[in-house]
Image (cartoon, rainbow, N blue to C red):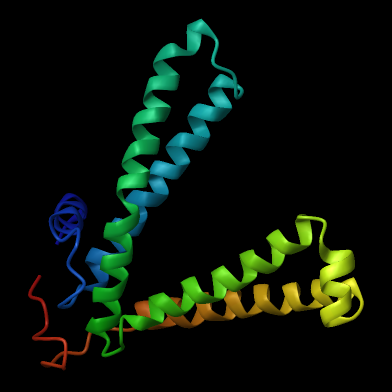
Length: 169
């Protein structure tokens, strides 16, 4: 599978959370998403973050790249689930990351909302304990990402597993 075929396959299987995906398909699509982000950052740097009339073409290109990046969100999740299936793991590993992220964000938002003095101090003690909790949650998110990365780097299980037969390239 080449670069273009991997992108087409990911978008063709937009809502497919069943089956398996090869390493090559997974990493080519992640390269595609990374290149979209690099393109947006380059355009932002070229236009210096302003929308002047002479930057109209750059602004339109930025918007197009942003829309393509947003449209890649669900296929990348589905592809990660299928990649985990390929190494014999459940797709719920992806859901665990969203759970950790939701807890992390709720702590941050509560802390930033200014209620940390009364609400958090009364329930959890000193507000610094909340910051320690935030550090622990952030560290757990990093550890989770490392585990999923290691799982996605592993070679495909060469035989049929509970998620189906191996994909032929």
